[in-house]
Image (cartoon, rainbow, N blue to C red):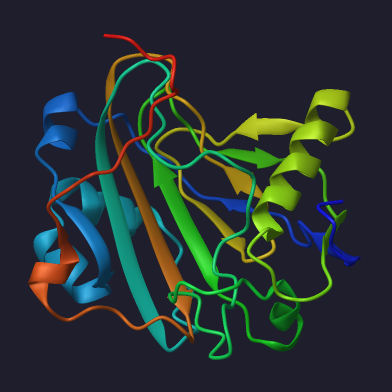
Length: 233
């Protein structure tokens, strides 16, 4: 596969934990919420707005790691628009020689075996574009034996094929409901089904990723979206 020497590794080792949800926020509230990038918990509460504070309050943060970072994204979705690059993956993979998940370098999935894993909390509003997870546990997949940038192409292709064949079951996370998982959990963004303002928040508890301190870096002034090449207005 991919002309690489491969080995096998297990994903979905633990069950994701779902918390208590809340009612859908208004489209006006979502539209007027600030986006945040790697904000500290203090700055997220201070600058993130009513919806961000409500979402954080619904999460069962463990406070067991050195750092907490908060990311929020607000998208005005159109049918078939993707608010993230679609593909099955896990979050927080160590990269490069530094094993820092935030650097742009080759992912080293094997290093996760010997490191203290990150904890992720996710909440998404709306109905048309909910992150998907895999129901089954202990999913064994082929990965490059050595760090390689093709890791996630390999993972996504395998998982997509297993979902299509019925061997794995993909499901949408519940809306406006926090979910907590570890860094072995497979998940993917999906294309939107309808017009909608969408709010996503991810809170990461980690020993590896420090929050940013400059508000010019923390407050998002742009929101990236992706369209299929056949899209037309």
